[in-house]
Figure: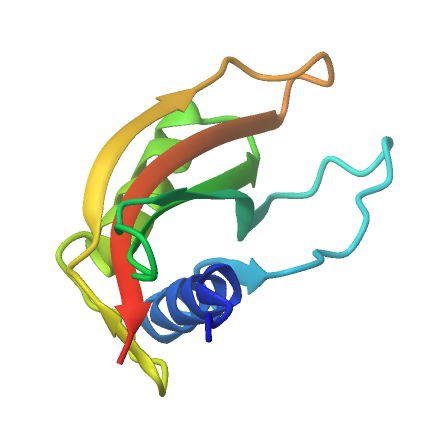
Length: 138
């Protein structure tokens, strides 16, 4: 019998981010509030992006490499604020092991990151971090 390792990884990574990032610094969200185009107030949030799975196990063996993207959005004038928030997310995840009942996780590995210049509004900055973790039923 197989189990849903993608959902377990998603829940585990979210819990690690939510525990490590103070709500006063950024909102860790699955579905952040919509931003009006005319709203230029400073705002920071971190959310899960794409989650992919690759089988590493043999026949009748469930072992997967889960790749999780973390999307970081900062609305404000300083791109360096985006990078600081991306670093907080990296510190929260790199080397950590998600704790979800019924699943054995390896430690989370940092796979890369990128950030973009501000959007057309001049204040919205976005970055993506990518992490990998192995998972199998406990």
